[in-house]
Length: 155
Ligand SMILES: [Zn+2]
Image (cartoon, rainbow, N blue to C red; front, top):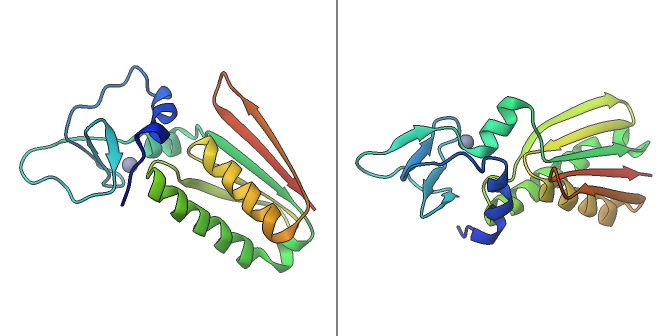
């Protein structure tokens, strides 16, 4: 599993005052912080610190980096397909950086749902994948300062 150092740089801004000691194991998801980044690897043998990784912390704090809003009549008929596509994107994204995750999926109505991702890239990647698969219109609003992406897909 490869973990991309560059990909985690922005992620770390959320916790720029937070310093993790090495090695640290996330007590929620089990990721290991070592060599300056979070990796999906076996727990280190011997002693390690315990803490909560930035992804789990965001989920706990309900403080998401990406919010994707989907509006379409096909949500009702193709819900399973849409959810599978999201999960696949999440898996792909986790290979680049295991801190990129779907925090929660909210069904608002028969034809509307919100998807919350720990960091902005995943919301954008899912939005693009949905547009590729189902067409429709995609609008990405990205605020550089607070590192939050709001992604809207309508069909
Ligand atoms: Zn974690």
